[in-house]
Length: 304
Length: 320
Image (cartoon, rainbow over the protein chains, first blue to last red):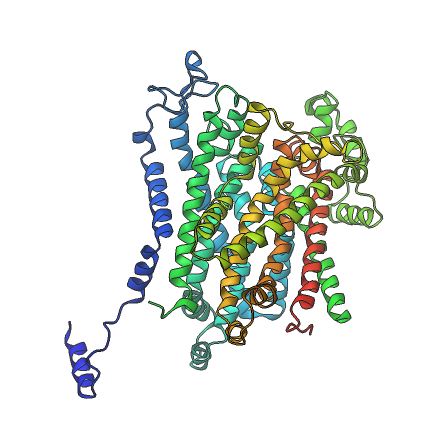
């Protein structure tokens, strides 16, 4: 305990408040609530496992996921190939492991891009209001009127598949959600007295948005972004399944499901395994999102 | 009220106008020549065609005009009910959509009704029996339901019910007016897949909303008045808890349409989703443009209906 707090305690004890509860930092409180939720913990562990799998894929994968061996095509699950092999003789388990890289990369890329663009637009719409608000929010409405997977499918096919283009396509699809969420949050935050106080001392527009509005909106935004990661992985799988996603030799869970579908009667594991992987990962992101909401939602403050 | 509806209608039309601009920009400004498909269909490669032939084709499709003029031409056509001509099918886009749309709407409406009913019932049951095994099981299933890829569920269902046990057909579509039972049998799995995500998310939403309402003062008042539990739940809790749920019913329409893109591919159903997917692959730009616009129209219209009905369900809302 440092000197200044001792003095404060001393002062308080005179007026009879010695029993004041220890003050928890905001971060510690959030962490405590978050990990107090069993499902959030499960989700967190799944996400950690995903990240580690993606990083250490070359170490974890028993085979090269791209090495074709027609003599080994369509093997049933065995000790050599735990999840069997696909029609080109590639090891299914290794491909599922490498698929985590594509999913994670696409999710982070698309959400990261959508967050930067969407949140800046949302912030500006809320802050400047008037014509700026109308223009930005009406374009958002227009993007929202078309199902996200349809936007992504059209853009991906026009740009022509591949990892980078899938990230762009899904990013565009995710922009309206980020924008709308940020705008709503910012409008609420701007009602606060501290914004007026900041304005009264002549804070500039940019500083106002970045230093005063954004940090206060961030908790809610973080929740939307976490859940968005899961949604993006689902959408990427959908695109790859349709064949407008990540291009063939690359191991993507969606296209693996689609490829395996042709051999479902003899080798069901080819389709089942990547599907289960998608499910687990999206479940993980959703549960982390739910946990964060419980931990960060201001309405639940003070219950711990 | 009339003023509110008028304003919302104008806003909806504005949004649809922006959709047309966006889809036009995406389809025309990004790389790729709409003629490639036409040429590859006529068994000629770009190199084999003389410049005059190319120009003639461009002129035929109106692609030689400046982009803004092309846009105005397109919109002018749309306003007169002419969506242009499909390059791939060589028929009117309007005719194609008129054939495909009813199929998607038919499956979509069934999915919408199924998910609304089941989602709300599950949510209410979970909230009323909070903490019991029913609540735990349904909540976990709902959490899994929003994470499972719908097209993968479709494949699983085909594997189990069609290929292993031969109970249901693997896919396809029959009009309910030609053969009602065959139509129903073919619709069971696609409708389930389309509604799965909606059921799960509506369950979660309803449950959360119910638990929120239960905390309100007027529910405590109802208890202290000595009302029966049944009356409190049905008359006081559910009615109020459904208000936020109705808001997201509009979103379900968009989700179901989005899902149909994947599900119609899995079950080989000749609906809008399948048409759009094929059109996207074939760079059949007229079909893509028209399809996106039509889907957006349905979504905007259903959101409009939700917004208007909102005030009917929640009299606290004033249309101002």
